[in-house]
Length: 232
Image (cartoon, rainbow, N blue to C red; front, side, top):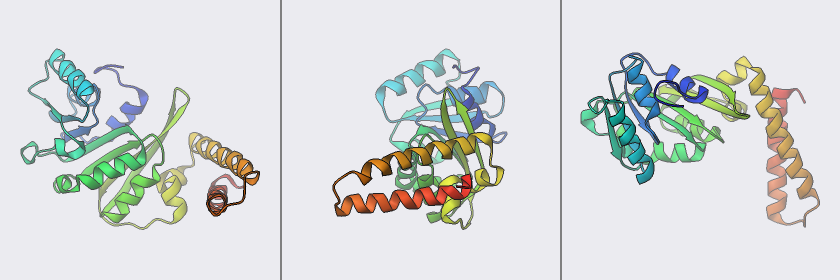
């Protein structure tokens, strides 16, 4: 992967960036995504934010090597604090982290989202946390995507400002993904359900405590909920 050819996962994230957007890529790592978006002519300006010194230095080197220092501003900052008012950012991308971490980043820096029109999130796990944050903070899901790469399954959630209500199943599996029911979507939830059943079986043999009981009940609810998707 480089600034000319992204992984399928990041290419899918890039596909949801609108022409002419000003992008802040949070947790940008090597700054591959913003550099690619500018190289492809889709956008003209971007911010690459990194909280860790190593990836920040890597992003700086890549941007300089590509001759894009005038187009990509690389900042060492925690989450959305990489965004400054003069950047005029209207699109935020956050990819390659757990859903709860993405939700925490959005929550901690939500004052920086006032001028942002679109958030494109790619949680590696527990995407539900991103959907829960969105509903609680005046954002609605306008699209979703799911793909498999190198044996791993990834979800992408696209948010814009607005209000919407989702039931527990939609919050868990994604309303757009539920509607499309792609093969990889079904594979993901078959995997999840199988793992939950395995854990439940092991808990059945464990000492009966309040914590074990609560965990078993939670797993049963999850298995039953996802069973609606799988027809089990």
